[in-house]
Image (cartoon, rainbow, N blue to C red; front, side, top):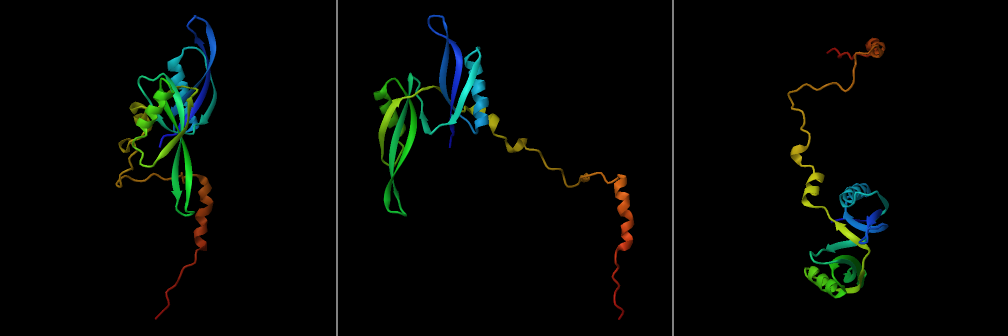
Length: 194
């Protein structure tokens, strides 16, 4: 399951009139931890802008799924409710999930949401849909995933059994000479005579 992080970034952007403006944008990215999210947003922002930028906030998002579109202009956040039955209590239970949908308007977003969730077998109800503050979404692509996954062939190999083991510590120091004379204190067991 993907974990999404929302990153708020402040940077200078040149508007259509040619003036520099300070912009606060929210970006959503897939990451394995807060540290990974911070590293990824720095990398992505260096690709987006050559100006200085500052990462103001990173928080874990409550989004469970992203439905992208090639021709959408805005990101819409939809809240759906799924009714499940709690078998132990014998009652209905409502579970809310949040989904990000790219579309041109709310009607298009609702249509894309229904198409994107057509695989679901349980009934759901879309309880709200609104324009999101997310400027762009950066999921892991195949190349980035290959860099994160360490294959077994790259793991270090164990030493063959026929090679001698190296000692864990050096026993040639003089500190061990004091213990060499303690062998005289050992008791010897004598066999009983028959």
